[in-house]
Image: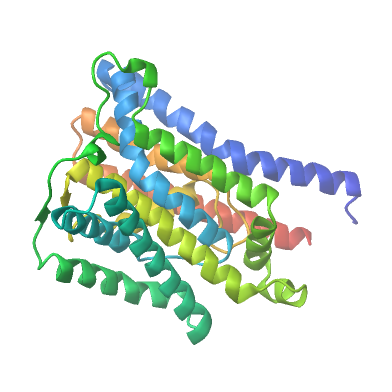
Amino acid sequence: MTQTPLGDGFRERTRWLALRLGPLLGLIAVYILFSLIGPESFSTFQNLETIARQTAIVGTAALGMTMIIIAGGIDLSAGSMIALVTVVIAASLQAGIPPLWAAILGVLAAAFGGFVNGFLITRLRVVPFIVTLGTLLLFRGAAKGIAHEQKIDAQLTWLKDLLAALPVGAGWRIFPTGVWIMLLLAVAVAAVLRYTRLGRHVIAVGSNEQTARLCGVPVERIKILVYTLGGAFAGMAGVFQFSRLTVGDPTVAMGAELDVIAAVVIGGGSLSGGEGSVLGTIVGAVIMTVIRSGCSQMGLPNWVQEIVTGSIIVIAVALDRLRHRKQHDFS
């Protein structure tokens, strides 16, 4: 039986709502659950601020990962980039470079790392999984080399305030500066994906690379640009990580790339490419933070948190595959 245009339109609107509202409804359900079974401290504004601060690092890196995954790629080196940035910032501060320029150098280092990923993927024509698995070790090794395999202490600067708890009397700010930066970056990425030619090209490459190439989309340049931007966002996450640590640590953010990828997937991003949303990614990052905060306040061990988070990721991927299978059956 042939689908009518009206039926097709209704199905598309239903998919759009499910993609964007599904993760949000999941977040509300998880928060209500921990509010009911957890301690009273969980639902306080102070804990909400803590959740926001803890989300900023993964959430910022996940914004770049959203573009990469929508374009049909993946980046396993994000955690190593974050560690490298903390080392670059600390070493720069030790050398007497002002804090702002030290942070910029860190972001540029990560952006260059993203460029290397994109260049190798497009020029060597090797799958992103393999390339970024290699650069995961490369960037981590570079961080350890710069730091001589130890932490780099640096003088305290205003960078430490980016994700610090709000001081007394500053409640009008609601969240620390770093959280607001993450939200502004989220709005910028959403605008790029929705209203610009670059956004349309990113989606086209992830949906069907061969078709995009035939339509004149510069696929290689788009991939290199997307990975470079992804590196820059990982670099900003590294700045936030340094803000929390106040030292350069080449061993920090081990496995953070999994949290970053999970935030995109839980938020409705498709590992097949062509689908994803900035709102879903931020919500996905918050869901993981809420789970960790709730389990921690209930005194549950880390392995319980990991099982719960892993289960959510598996369910999100399974739902994504089921959705694609149904689309294939309808087509």
